[in-house]
Image (cartoon, rainbow, N blue to C red; front, side, top):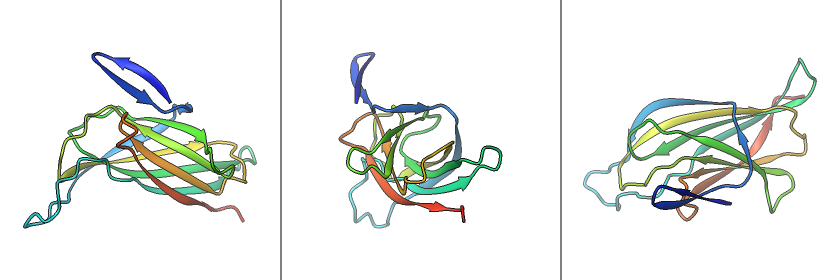
Length: 154
């Protein structure tokens, strides 16, 4: 984890390799309000929905890892997302990804939906799980989802 001074506050960014080639699509909003309100209003990020698929690249003959995420974030767009990749500390067959953004969480029932997709070329076939964290530059508030890597390779 790296600490960065930004204006008057100090934020933390995850250690790892920054993934520059990513696609971010805004998909609208979703309202999680239940009437009458029986649950407290949410202030922490919701864990992302994640799908990971290993494919064979016909041009190179190597395996690629395609990661697709759906992320729920409070506050209005636009948001500048950065994705970091890092080998798992606890599992040699897992990669950890941190979808980082700098927003102060606000209590909300309504969340903006973002689809973030990225591909890692030439990935080891020993990687069988990924864990994706929605990292709001406050590690105490970050949420993660672990999923099994599916294979489209026979």
